[in-house]
Amino acid sequence: MGEWKRHRILMVSDFFYPNFGGVENHIYYLSQCLLKLGHKVVVMTHAYNNRSGVRYMTGGLKVYYVPWKPFLMQNTFPTFYGTLPIVRTILIREKISLVHGHQAFSTLCHEALMHARTMGYKVIFTDHSLYGFADAGSIHMNKVLQFTLAEVSQAICVSHTSKENTVLRSGLPPEKVFVIPNAVDTAMFKPAPERLSSHEIVIVVISRLVYRKGADLLVEVIPEVCRLYPNVRFIVGGDGPKRVRLEEMREKHSLQDRVEMLGAVQHSQVRSVLITGHIFLNSSLTEAFCIAILEAASCGLLTVSTRVGGVPEVLPDDMIVLAKPDPSDMVQAIKKAISILPKIDPQEMHNRMKELYNWHDVAKRTEIVYDRALKCSNQNLLQRLSRYLSCGAWAGKLFCLVMIIDFLLWHLLQLWKPAEDMEEVPDFILSHDQDEGISQDNENQSLR
Image 1 (cartoon, helix red, strand yellow):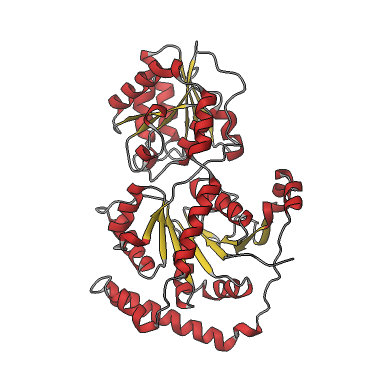
Image 2 (cartoon, one colour):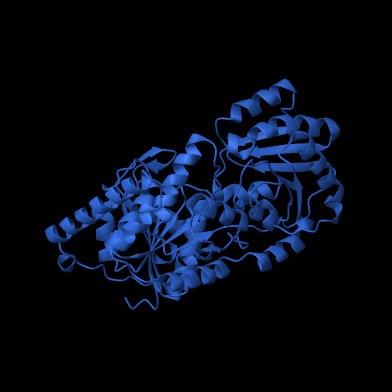
C-alpha cells in the first residue's frame, strides 16, 4: 500500500492483450513506464473469450476486462449509454484524474471519453492510424472523431503526418495536438549473436495479410525478385484474407522452396523470425508510424518500405530504402537494398535504435501532455453544447441531443447510487524489489 505521487490515469481501448498489435503494445509499454514514474495506471478494455473481470499484469498494472464481447474487428457494439454505469464506477472507485483513449475506430474509447467529459474529467486521445476523406467509411469515422474530439483536453499523434491527418479530419486546433512517436523494446529485439551468411539473402515480411498492408503488392513483387536473384528467399509471417492470394502465387510460380509461409506469429516469437533475415519488407498502403519497422531495425535488418504516411519519419535514410507503392518501384528498392547490405552492421544499427527510440522517453513526453490537460479549464453544459453545435448543421444538433441525454443519465445514476456510497479501491503499489521478482512466465500464468 502507499500513495501515488502524481496522476491517476485510465487507459481505454478495444485493443489490448491478449491481442498483439501496434496499439496493444503502445498501451502496455506506456503504462509500464508511467507506473515506474510514480503514476497510477488502470486499463479498461472488453472481455476476450473467457478473460473477463479484473486482472493484474507485470508491475501491478490493473486491467478491467469489462463483460462486453467484440462485435466487429475486435470492436464492441456501439451502445452510446450502455457503458456509462461501469465507466462511472471505475472512475470513482479508482479515483481517476485523467482518461486516455486510444485508436479512432475503438467504440469503447469513444464512449468512455464521452462519459468522462460529461462527468468533468480531463480526457486525452491518441490517434494511431491514418484515414482518408472520400470513401463512405472514412466520412462516417471522421464525423465520429469530430464529435469525440470536440471537447478533448489534449490529443497525441504518433507522427507529423498523422497530426496533419487528425487535425484535418477532426477540426481540432493544431496547438492542442502533440506528436509523440512510438518506441521499441530494444532489450527484447536484439540482433542475432552471429552475423548471418551472405550467400543466401533472406527477406522477411511480418504483417497482417490484408489489403491495407499491401498484400496484393507482395503477390507481384515476390516472383519478380525471385526471378532476378536466385539466392533470395522470402519468409512471410502473418495471416489474413489475402493469404490465399500469396499461396496461389507460390503455387503458380513454383516457389514453395523459396517462399516460406509461417501463418500468424505470436509477438514473443517475432524476434526469432526477424533474426533469420537480412532485409525487412513493409508494403503498407497507409501507415501512421509502423512499429514493425522499429522492431526489424532493432534486430539489425535493413528495411525496404513503401513511402506512405508517417513511414519516412521513422528511420534515418541510411537505415531504410523507400519506394512508391508500386511493384516495379519496390523491386528497384529491393535491388538497392541488396547492393548496400555488405555495409550494414546489425549491432551498430541496434545501438542507434537504443538512442533513437525509448519507451521511457515516450512516457516522459506523455507526462507533459497530462500536465497540460489538467490545466485546462472546466466548462458548464451550455459552453460544452456550443462546441458540438459547430460540428455541422444536422450533426451538431444530434451531438447536442446525445450529450444532453448522457448528462441526464449521469445525474440519474448519481441519485440512484451516490459517489460517496461507493467504496474506493485500495491502491496496490508494487515495490521495485517485488517488480524485479515477477517473471514474464508468472504474468502469463496469472492472466490465463
